[in-house]
Image 1: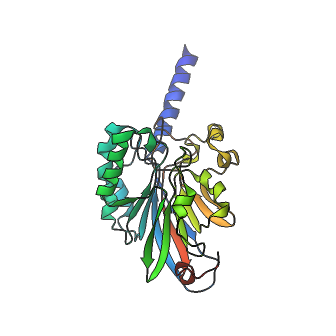
Image 2: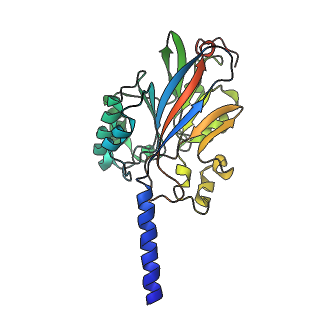
Image 3: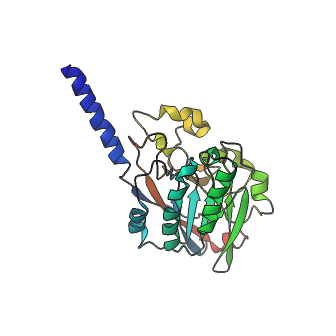
Length: 281
């Protein structure tokens, strides 16, 4: 009996510690500079990924407190907001915070596999809420922003894992010589971008395993990148950088082991030649 009680106590403490980890939100700063010579413009991007509002341990007010003194040019929301229609009521409070941060070039959003668990009118409502609070949703489409008279393409590729991505549509009409910033949820799409030009890609999806102990073996079923142990942080493919966020919320159960929720600020250096569409791909 003593051994059983000791085991139960240790297990309870471990689960509680794993829950506390979900409140330990890391503010990461990633700097990606162009290798091209010439004058640079810096684009500061706030990335929020995998909010999973059913299991999130940071309040909108806490997010605002962390970010209120940051200068933000662009907010990128890279999918998995929620997967239950009853949770839709929680989303506006977080979107209001993103609006308060007043990003110079706006807020852009793509969808993830959990968002597509919602069906028909519920999914439509999710998109309408995002749009209502100033988020431009990109579903295999692109938007151009102007920085000091120069153009940067924001390319939103829909979720790869659910079969909703369409590269041809996403890139339609774009030149390989432009600066292309890709927003997507599932980073596995990067393996299919050998014929498409990107300069930087932002994604999420893996949560760094969420339970990364001793290793995130359960991620192996989530694609080639996971099997290559590429599940978080900054990496390169075709000599171009891409980033995988650990995400802000949790899925399944609200715990983390060996991983932490994150908010990410990317400082991206873009040469004026690239942004003008004059650089070689």
